[in-house]
Image 1 (cartoon, rainbow, N blue to C red):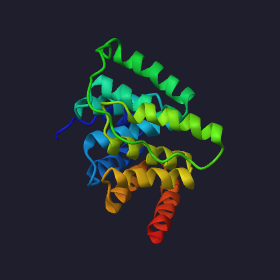
Image 2: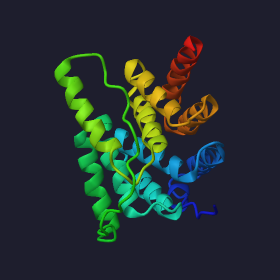
Image 3: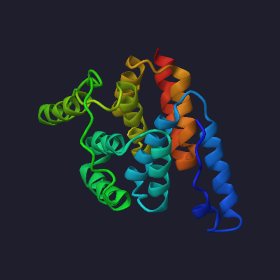
Image 4: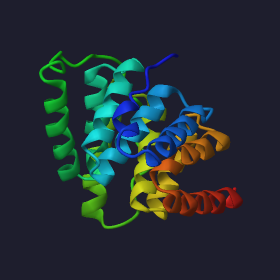
Length: 214
C-alpha cells in the first residue's frame, strides 16, 4: 500500500534531527510481518501510553486513515486500550481525537463478529481478577478489531509500561493463540524500537526468557 508519509512537520523542526526522525520512521515502515494498519495501532498505543498527543498523534491518525482505518476503528483502538493503558490516558486521547477529527468521526459504529476469547484471567486478588475479566470480555466481545490486533496492542502496552512479568506472558500467549508466530512477535518489538530503545531491549530479553521455557 502506498501512503503519503506526513514528515514535513518533523523535518522542519531541526536540520539534523529531522533526517534522523525520517530515517527511524522509514525503518519502522520497512519492518516485515505486520500490516500497516497494525503498525499504526501500535504507534497510537505508544502515543496514548506516553501522552504524546500533539504532532505524533496527529501524524499517526492521518497515517491510519490512509491505511484504511476509518474513524470508528481508530476509536475502537482507544476503547480497547482503556483498561491496559489506563482510562485517564484514553480520555485525553479521545479529547484530542475529537479535536483533530472535527466532526468527521461521527459515523455510527460498524457491526461485525466479536474478536474472540479474551486472555486468561490473572491468578491474583479475586476482586481485581473479576473486574479485569469483565473489562476484557467487553472488549474482546466487540467487533472492528481482530483477536490478533487486540493481542498485539496488549503486548505493546506491556512494553511501553514495562509490565514484563505475568501481564506480558499472558498477552504473548494471547497473541500466539491468535496465530502470531515467534518472528512476528520479534518484529513487533523491532517496530517499537524508535519509541524507546531501552524498553524494547528489556522486552526482547523477557520474550527470549519466555521462548526458552517452551
